[in-house]
Length: 270
Image (cartoon, rainbow, N blue to C red; front, top):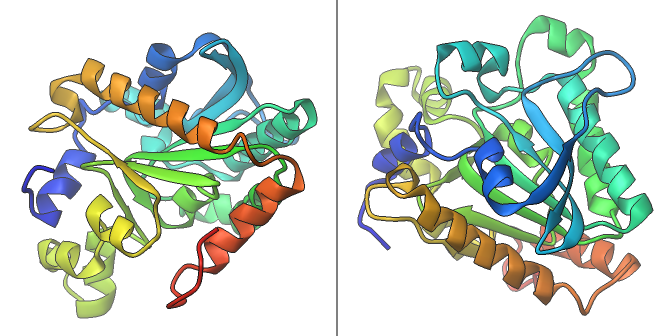
């Protein structure tokens, strides 16, 4: 694993050229059929999802969507979904369970959209419902943190039987800037916060929060996306194969025990 500081990994996780959900879907899946809308209010483009084939196997795939430039970032709200995005994700996951399809999610968000209007439309409830629904799904769920995974906006599609991270991805309760502003009243201490938060893939693997690290090229995923696609493809195949021995309620039970064991010394994850 390359020797980068935590702050450098945050910068790599946020790099504008880093492969995103749309890139992974295009590279790893075939016959992708996008599904839109939450069937209640409207479409939220910050969540991209639908049905696809993965090595010939039907799956449901979804994830946060950021833009590559300012125009796209405005269109996708900088990868910060509102409640409609999470309701859409929930709808797709329930549909996957109905038809027995594994769920694969890609996590890359600075957090759920924090605006007043999102709260008025039920942001907190939408995230909480996703956590409950994902916890109980009776199909395999594999989650990959590909870039920036922050707060409940990331966890809302992150309750998986297997949770993986790209080598330079980060996963945390909030952004380093927010952490520094709250703890020290000084967002300029964000670099210091990066070290304190233990948000790197290596930190989280050691803490038992994730199950594996997917390697990246030296310099970050954006320097050789094809190598990253191959690595993610291999990791997904391995993860899904490893879950074949479980089915139905056993998948939900494994997921429940895994998350309940986090932070409890001596407790088994599975």
